[in-house]
Length: 380
Image (tube, rainbow, N blue to C red; front, side, top):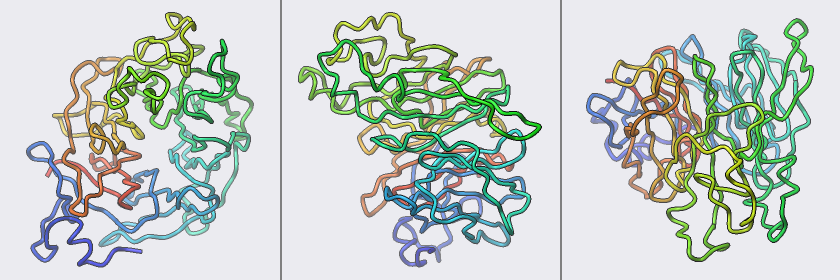
């Protein structure tokens, strides 16, 4: 349900009657680069996580509905004179990932499974489950996914634990054989059915942000472990471990739970050969919590083709949207620019970006689950 106008005015820190406008929407009171702004497309959603702009200007949004099972939904925000919400599917189990497939169908990730549907028939959409064997237990059951250039589907299988603490003192972590990895699924596109899957990459605690560059480069943003100071009091939990951006390659091991940052041994696994694991391409601030990432291919010239990452974290390095310049292969090659910062609402709530995707209008659309909003960012 949409928030009352007066309440929305208080949240935005300005009177709507004074018409502080951004790209046709109420302006969000944040700091942006000169000439850019952020506006609230819609509010009152229940834990919005995934967002997908459609060619006609409408938006699809996954509402997780909370951490209880079967409380989620997929909502269509239809654009007429203004956006109007319509629930396409309800009683979904913690829906998160939301992407457009190479077959023109929309893919939705629920806890444990993935379904697709034809966006050309939104009056009576029909679910077709294509994957139903993903694990649901433990700390990270949410599904994120992306298609590579060969039309294979990469799917996050997050870790069940924080850092496999139950295996402390042992040489290896049994959980790392089945969790904390990315699966790669292949399809028979004549029938549209999955033909099989394999483990694509290991040692990735929770891959909630995935992106594919036009060159074929696959990037993953890693949400690193928590409470490292509980395992080693000499380490500062505010600064370590850093979150990461990794270049994904088939068969590579990126270290979780044995290693962190640039192949440093985790306190629980001091003897693991971390030198044999793949180092990150970029170290992000600790607890930035990157939950969404995309290439801004159709963006304004200043940031066209840059990698945009949402920092969901509630600690000092979180609650912002940043953009990295990239090289010809799409790998970040310089210092990031903060597109949205000072993202603190008057009631003290911090911004919490999750998914971020470019729209056909060249703008970015962002889900903020903590504040129940979908936000648009772009050039004024």
